[in-house]
Length: 305
Image (cartoon, rainbow, N blue to C red; front, side, top):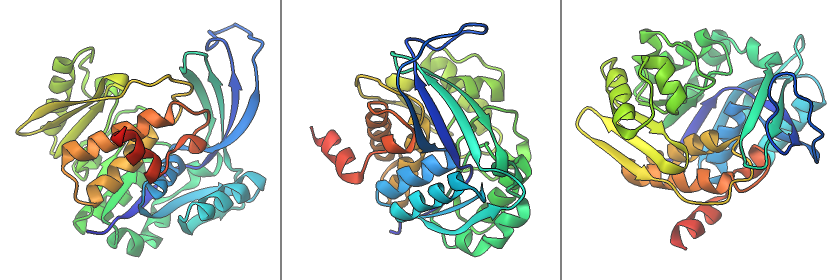
């Protein structure tokens, strides 16, 4: 089976400060090392999928600036097709400011820039790439009407759609009707359903509410606990892995990118989630978004250890 993955989404440059703890409103903290890293939820997912062995095409927008040029160079280095990464003359590349605490927790603010200009016509222009994909992955750092258009294009041709509903926001039933696999974390599941998720039972109830909207599979990611898989016929927690967390910034993105590759390869849902859990666990042991995405070899070695 093929491993053709198309990602529609955002590309940002992350500016990271390591701090003792994430500052609260009004607090100033003297931080440690400052660094920059390639990021953006869409780009992170694309890089994670490529390093896990996927044949990846990325659809997005960057600015005509040094951040945009560096982002595209990075995609090419990871073997990602950039034919549909558009350079925006009117908007700068997206930027994220990130505080990372010593416990690995983070706080992020994003200036969307060119990501906010990714339009339905942009994905229509890339329809051939979507038609030829095994799986389309998306998130919510680009306009909802663009997400909706891409989901419709894919599902109408039988291409499986994975939607990571992050950053969290309300989604229409029309968007959800095109989604095969939805991957919210606990807070995202709560926002989408109104059900507070504090346990596996809660996760199951929230997922059932989403399944009722026509989604085939809901995977509620629960951090170190693992991922709770819910379909119309089954519920199962696939346990996570215990590691020393350094930076959790891109863990969800790595999970989704590697999940798509494993699914496209024909792994069972449980096997694919275990593979994605391992990749996500490895990612939190390194600082930075895309720099933390592990290679296929690293994932397989970790699973075999």
